[in-house]
Length: 537
Figure 1: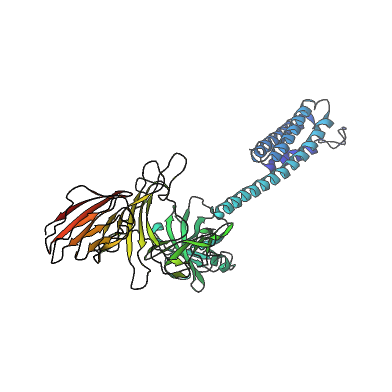
Figure 2: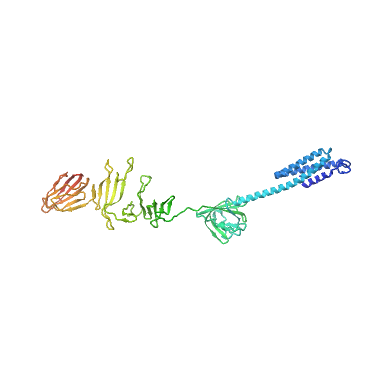
């Protein structure tokens, strides 16, 4: 390759071959005259070739570097071609050859300047590219980040100005990061570090450590806990380490953090029925509240407590609870405990209000079970067709008096109103049909007695004379019972019946003195009572 110095020297000699005057006397070094063509032609041609070759080399070199240098080299090559043309025409015009040589010299100088500029541009571009790569790697995939220097020690101590270290050389085993309070440039970063655990989530965010000039080296952790001031440095709790790592002591690194959002609300104030502590958006008096104290929670709708749950079990209020179809057992209870432990469905009744209850009175419904069905147009509720099992108060209630009776009702075909079929009264008596009545009551003898089957069965006192049983005062259809008779010490006392009594068996009492007879009856219809007599005891 022709050097720049060689090329410039050849161009300078070309200038000496012609000084602007064709006369030999004034231009002894020219191409004509004594000592002219014979002595100078070959050196001139060689110098022209040297300049042309040098310009070609410059062109080749500059084209590999920048477009600007290539352009200058092209211009230089063009000048070399012009010099070659002048060479061919040199015999006829020495002035043209000298002029081309002058132009070639100027082009060579310009080409040299362009080559220097191109080299400078290439160096600047390479530097910019290197810096861009470093800045990109410095981000490490996390924005924002702080520039630090890696420290390979693992002790819980200040790693030194601008340095950062882990508490373990094993990536997955590291549980803490120790960061100096200054970054690599000496600026304080405590305010930045203290914000890294501000999230109320258990996982505060993701921390990434990346080499600033080698993108293949990085680590990533989840940040938990809070930032601890270690005096001159900060301690950050980590978990879940991953990444290739590979940092050496003194490596330039970037430490970046991506914060997690705050955790959603996990608690609420107790509130009231009018303003539940947790209310439905757009419905401020509907939601959850704690109106009954600790260890309870209430369901509120429209400002009314419709259900309450506590450690002793649920309490239901309101009009009704609808259970969606799940399976053939929509409601069931399971209880595990001792043999005496209950697994009951509980209903409770009071008079007054829920806030100010008063005692139930005789005849009040306390609760029960209703079974209804769908008739093609609507559902029934038991009381308007279906079956009902109902518990009622049999007396006015107090702290020492809580009597009850239980009724069972079914609905006859082609009707919609249930009829009581069986009553178990407060004394345990089974009464078929009618309303509840007491056990047998003893009444004094009279010659004519009218019995009230709706109220009770009877034991009639010692017969001291003939007895006529008049037609009953009520006919609870389906009711059955017994009437106990006892002859006095004289005996011979007879019993007769009014017209609505119909015998179906023996109709004569045992008239032997001191003997008992039992009249068994059955109310089969209004004004129809069938009976039979057993006696002899």
